[in-house]
Image 1: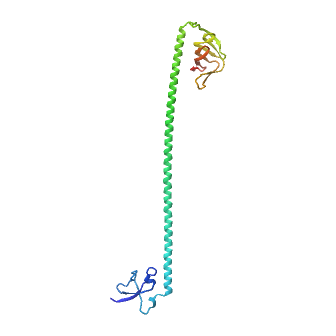
Image 2: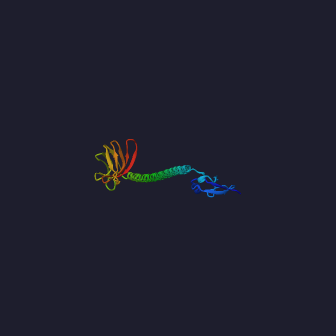
Image 3: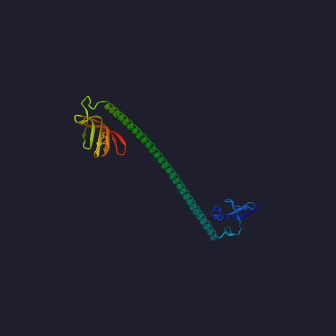
Length: 244
């Protein structure tokens, strides 16, 4: 095999090409011993391997510029891609946070609504229990008064205690019925209301029962001139038992 002389032109990427070193290789494998790029054959008389020094410098500068520009573009593209990934990740994190917040708020509202419904149901049950208790108490009192009236009717006008039927002016109404010592006393009397008046129900809550002229209070119960109970008959036909 014949040997030839050559020079590598892979400037910048090959130190042998940078030094313009003449290499000897056989003609069947005529490549650079360092970078294995094909060699350019040179003659014995060609000085410095046939490369013009100015052209060599220009090639080196161009190659270096290409490397720098390529690196800059690659870095810029890498930074841009990294920023886009960060922005996308931040947007996704915000979307997840918003979704979690919406779910939390919806669940809190559902729990609040459920609590409100339970409280309303409990209050309704308590109100109903109170209504039933009041109705039972009124029914028991009405029965007690009715029993007292029935017993009073069985007695004579004058009782064994000296009570007698009579009438008196209460100021806001006129009373007729059982009396003792000149005062209303006993069960079964009637008051005819002559002027508006508020009856203190003495329930510890300051409740009062307002009566108006023209109304009557029947089946009264008095204790030595003090009204204790009765049945108010209003002008519209409604009735109401009360204790005081």
